[in-house]
Image (cartoon, rainbow, N blue to C red; front, side, top):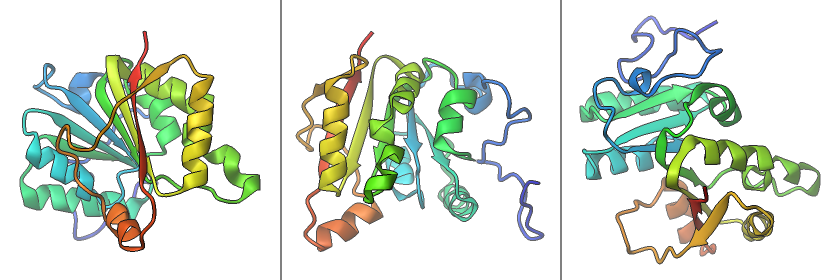
Length: 209
């Protein structure tokens, strides 16, 4: 059953809530009226700080935040409303379901996966998204030709495992990401890890084919 607060509208005006959760959406349903604008998707958008900073910086682009936790989606939607940003929306759904069932193929110019759960225990490491062929295949399908996947983590083991998984994957090619080529805001998690002197590592990957 959908969550509905007595004091808040449901869904929020900037919340993507499909009429049918069992079919692929069209680009027009996600961002009505601007089919030509570049699209970026933030998988696991958290509190939305990165998402909103990008939307402010690039008003000519459109941004979709995907997040499974209800409280975070509500927080993101409130921030969007207060900011009066017209180029950003959020949806409450699992990343895997969004990729496999909802988002249209060839929809995004960029996909962001920033500081996902590193699943540090050995018995859980199969859950790491960047090491799952199904996840990489889903992102590849979501991206336009030449589109990019940008990934960051503070967990050295996860980064090494992602690099290893990509070495045997023909869907993406690694390209240079010096960090100062374009505006890329620091997330709250990243700021926290940097304060703790953790090593932040990232991958910038271009879709092949």
